[in-house]
Amino acid sequence: MRYLHHHGSPLGAITLAASDDGLTGLWFDGQRHDRAGVDTNARERKTAVLVQATRWLDAYFAGHDPGFVPPLDLMGTPFQRAVWELLLELAHGQTTTYGALAQALGKRTGRRTSARAVGGAVGRNRISLIVPCHRVLGADGSLTGYAGGAWRKERLLRLEGIHQAHDSDAPRGSSAGVHRVLQRSKRQGNCA
Image (tube, rainbow, N blue to C red; front, side, top):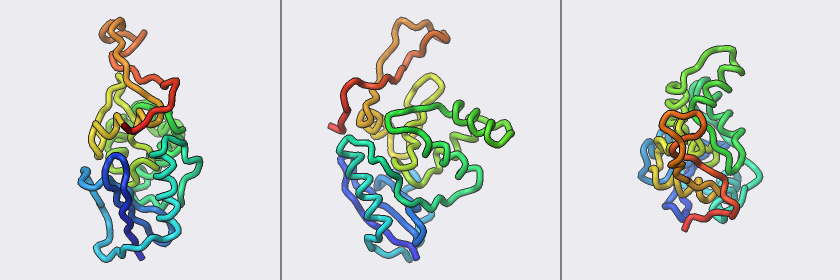
C-alpha cells in the first residue's frame, strides 16, 4: 500500500509518500519531478513512517540536525541507489561536489564513474532534504541544479549554517581558490 501526507514548511508545501517499508518520496509541491512515481491509488494517511518524517522535517526547519533518518524505501536503479546512499553519508552542514561523489562511488565499486552520471542520479532523487541532494555543488562551488529551485537550495544550505561568499582574490582557474566558496557559518542559519 502507498500513503501520502502533506506538510507545511517555511519554503513551501511539501508532499511526502511512503510504502509499508519506508519513505518513498518527499517533494516541494510544484518542483521538477514533483511526485514522480507516486501510485495513483495512494491514500492520504499519516503512517508511523510519515510521522517520523514530519518529525525530521520539523527539527530540520527549526535549524537543528534531526539526528536520525526515518525508514527509507529508496526506489531507483542500483546505480541511483548507490549514489543516494553516498548522499546519506553527508553530515548536516557538509557539502560535496558531483566529481567527489563520482570518485567515492568509483572507489566503492572499482569502476570509473562520471560526474555527469552521478548528477543524473542526484537529479532523480525522490526524497529531497532527507537524502540531501541540496548539499551537492558544482566543481567550482556553484549552486548547480536543484529540482526544488536554486533559491530553495541556497536557503537550505544557509539553514545548515553554510553561506556563500565571493572569493574575488582567487585568480580564474586557480587551484588556490574558487570564485564561489561555501563556508561554514559560525552562527546557526535560518530560513528567514
